[in-house]
Image (cartoon, helix red, strand yellow):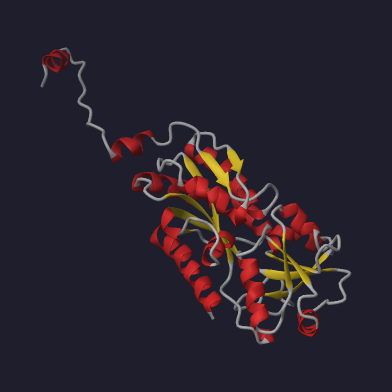
Length: 317
């Protein structure tokens, strides 16, 4: 005990404190300042809505502000490149979604699953093809028959080349159903494309176009899932139409740069799990058809890596 400590102890003023360093210090201090949330797509889309909703809820859980930055471009890779090159200190988090992971398998982007630590997968929904209410092709059979007879004539609005949308169209083309990919980086432009006659259909998840479904402007004709969607029981699966295209669910997760300390990841994971259990989040995910039990830890990392490998295998076939 030092001379000063001995004096304080004798005076009854000294209280021994544990020495905090390394992980313990980080865990005690984190977070102590605002955390930036990078949303990897433009305003108004599903990733943006998820990122902003979660940022609001995490602000309450973590006790610091979480400003949102939209860094769109290159099918989400512009934002993820910024995330991957940020300091691995927990003060930059971002959206990592299936569309971008599939683009890596297609050769886009300079990052990979190993560049990130997935905190939690918080949303998932199968992809659909929707047609406008005025379309002459009101069923998948009619749409696909027209595509077989007129290769490339039908235009499908997508979120970009190399994304899962594009992968699905490539798989359909391999089955003789050739349609043209018409990419729209801005979500609002993509949603409006079939309504304005700029495309004949759109590949999307139902939550992102819920307002158009409810208004009767868009009609779902096929779902790329193993089973019919409970909210759309009349819509056939691709398998029912003889197409082996499934397991391509559009998941969304929150990630941090690889190398972020485990105790910081654990604090973020705890906060995310609590946030998605809230009534506010549950109402949000029900409205967007994306509710799932959050996937965390090694299972979350393996989910992203496994999806990447699945897309890569399908593209090789």
